[in-house]
Length: 366
Image (cartoon, rainbow, N blue to C red):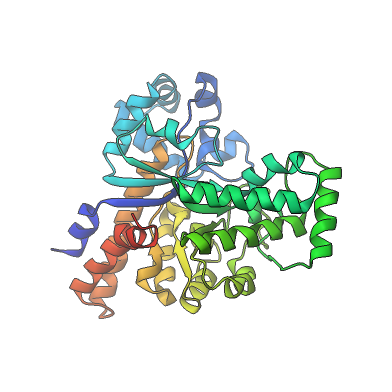
């Protein structure tokens, strides 16, 4: 089978994404472009990202019109369930692993919008933030937090996820007991509902890594670009190197290709056996940059440790944009590598099936 046909026909495992959510008519007509940029941009600037221009083309195909205002009015009036089902049916997605931390729609609620199999990922910061006000000592908090992780990983959750990159960065350290105790006391005294103490943030990530190792499930890390509270410098995945070596028995997934630190993420993935590299969010957000992203990831990282995902959130269009962009660019990269003599056609097809589906099936025991 030709490489491009293999890429086109292989069912997808989306190893990191989020639920869709109902949006008000006003949100769609006045600020829809915000869902297609991670920046804190005005609508005028957000409307001129290539990602947003791509969704306008998608909407033009869906609604047979080209006027932006008309398209947004039509989009605002859709039945979300039927519309989501329609878009996802065009992707050949077999299974979606859904982060339960955002938006305020549970994976089980999302499942009512689609026939695609839904598996849940548990965000550790949300769990810790719910517990900190309830427990006066760090010892009692730890006992409850660890027991909670063991419970959810014994049930329906297939992975854990941390957004420590958003809170205090990826330079995660190991801290002594006195520092952890003091950090917990300070966090409770200054509690705002958001976990932002660097020592305590680091500590719960270590606890999560230990839980993930006990249950042989992955711990996913946000790396690379994202919301504006992620500092551009401290999202570089190389900051995690010592942590990753400490937790060599924990499968770790570096999310979002580490973009723009993709080569660095590929280097870490190629160096440590327990590390995997997901290519979501950058797909589809960087649009014409997706092809070089895939190519850079393949420079060093083993093909068996690369994973497809969309990081789609809130709006179902992102699932379809990601699928179309990734399949097209993966096919182009693999065809070029075959033509240049780096791999046989048979091996290129194997790589395609692995990245799109088989690597995730093995990693998450699906």
